[in-house]
Image 1: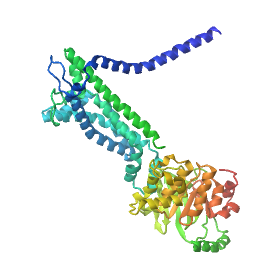
Image 2: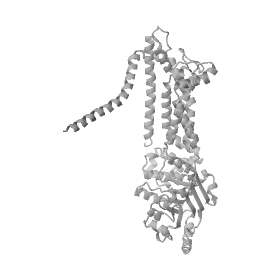
Image 3: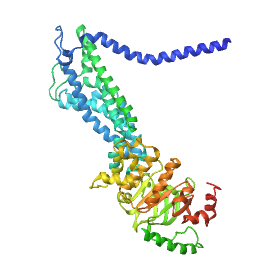
Image 4: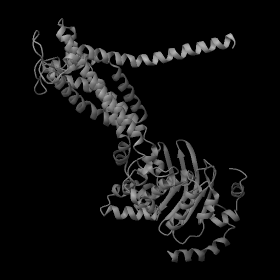
Length: 283
Length: 276
């Protein structure tokens, strides 16, 4: 075995290991984060933590029930404001839009998607919070909805575009009008992808903190209705992590664990829906 | 139906007497279903059909042959105006279905009367039943769906293969079955004309034979126009055959005449495989 051959083998082993380690490190980061969250916050995870209100500093116990409910309320608001606009706009872009207009909308949506979330917060602060003279769940939900809209728009458009043109032809050759073709053939053929896009967009905005600081603000009590400041998991994590109290730090870790767990759950179920969606046709 | 067939047989000799006329010529027909005259078709600024004129008889099978890109599929798509799905397309000329102007008809009504089966089978990702019922639902059919679905599947000679799995996905069928399902789907709305755009090009010989058998039966109830690359197929199934070349209808005549005694040299060259 010549020296050159041995050298090549050596280089191969080194490079192969390097690529493997780099690939693994991405996985490792997630495992590390999860491990940390459990290690520091695990002792706080119990039923009371999920359901009770926070206690004043110095008292042990208490929970984040209000923040969990608050996050759910905001996501609901975000969904009912952002998802319909994104869905219908996506249908327009994929099925009807002319060249120039579609290009403009698509480009703008991508830019909107790239707007830093803190800027989105300030925007909603200016157009909703200041006129209403109040931080509110409504403002927070709107901020998340505006963030979610371009994501849903683009993913809906892409999944609709992936539906083969031959299906549209098949329906229209039977005398179906365009709207009917879109509604009864194209959208049903893409709905699993569309649903996945919606779920992923919700998971994406569920962890947003910056736009909520100026909009839903925070509230250590139950927030009734839509018109009051509301705690949410990311904002509580942010507030507690900055505090000087060890107990609050532990609670922040626990809340982080819950938030990440929920986001992972949504992500994984979205991927499952999609992978089934692609094969379920052949039942 | 037999009266029309007899009548056709009676007028055929007279047509042969007229073979001295310049091509393209229309065979004498018992009853015209589709009459096209001076059809020009444009994709944007590019013209792809030139001055096409032909007449298709009721309850006859007309085959359109010619090399790829010669315009035969484009022509087929003018008959139910499917070309309108592509932007910047334009058809000019006189196209008539039972004497009504195709270009001015309500397009949904036109397509209900002129059904189409595509080159690649395109069943919807729905159940077999829903595939066949789709056209009926779209056209506001108020009667009982199951009977009509069953009848359509029987007409397309696929009922026995699918009767136990009507509510399973159509995508689980084989390629040949999918194509026959697409034929059943088109037949469900009882079209007067059925356009087939190379329906067998993706199928094996057995599946192809089944579809050809089907065409012989369907001929009794509708007018059929089939685009095909397979000349044996055209010779087997068609009453009349049209040969397209570079956007022009070179020759249109009785199938036997086209294959045995073509009037134009281009037709003969194509049929004998000298080009194309």
